[in-house]
Length: 240
Image 1 (cartoon, helix red, strand yellow):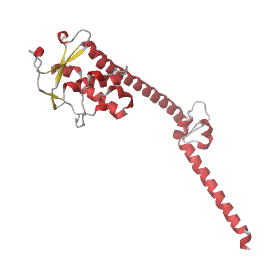
Image 2 (cartoon, one colour; image 1 turned 135 degrees about the vertical axis):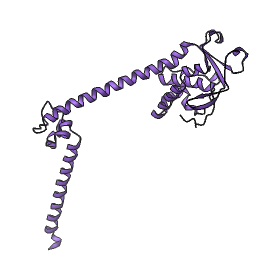
Image 3 (tube, rainbow, N blue to C red; image 1 turned 45 degrees about the vertical axis):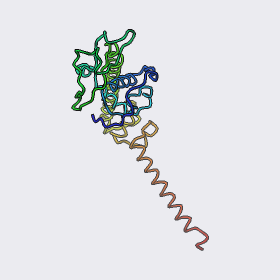
Image 4 (spheres, helix red, strand yellow; image 1 turned 90 degrees about the vertical axis):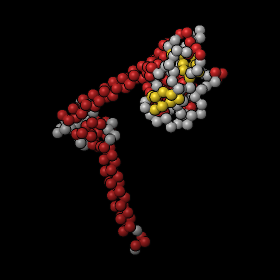
């Protein structure tokens, strides 16, 4: 993923930090806001300013999900950017940031530049965190997105099954098509069986059949108007 965005500042002052909304997107944005305090990734603030999660476009939401996958916890942990060390976390806290030259990090191999997804990034800090924090702000939101995706797939599958069943019924009626038949979906009947489209207008058909009906009706109205015009022209007193 290209990192060609303009970044204002990735670090939110402590006195300006806001409560994280109970929303899967907002939680991932908060997760990314922490990641972007750790590595120098150039990106616009709207992608990690979690209070504004609800105003993002569909494309921006997809970008956030891609970024979250790119900087997933196992990668950050393997690069020693996430430290699962309870001794480094203050009481009543779940995370704590450290400068990379902090003496308390002696013995930990921390690089000044790391490579992620074939791109190099300068390391700004490291973050000590608890597994519960990862679970709350990364694992659970990702699980919610996965469940949402499965539900959407089930809905689409059910709709396709219903359409397929309607198509089969209509195909059986192709040579004896009756749009008023209770076994035939009028939408499918009109489109696939090509029956008398005007006859199924009242059955709810609004696809090709009604368009054809409107075309025919328009032609009839046009012919009537032209005929009236000719009659009026030849019977006009001005011609006498």
